[in-house]
Image (cartoon, rainbow, N blue to C red; front, side, top):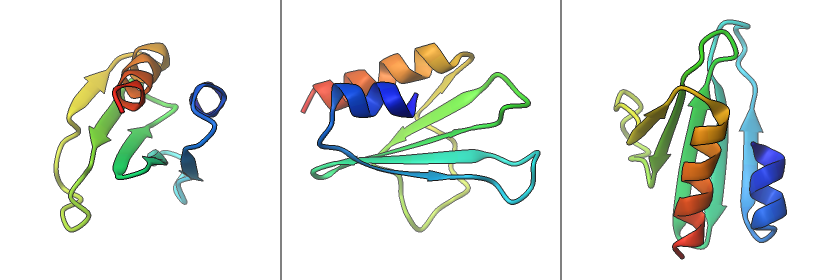
Length: 84
């Protein structure tokens, strides 16, 4: 996912965060100008969450979109970035 995003939009800034707990969520933050996208997933479950411009003070909110595959989540992120 990260390579597809950066290859398509080389100007974006990204931060990939690995979970401390092996069963925890991975986090990928993507920023393009004033658009911030948070992506989270677990390699142990086929579920990806994508949130555009998340509230930094509220970590308990559900993602804007949920996807059952990495490919579908990647398509959504590329769509959000392409609308800029």
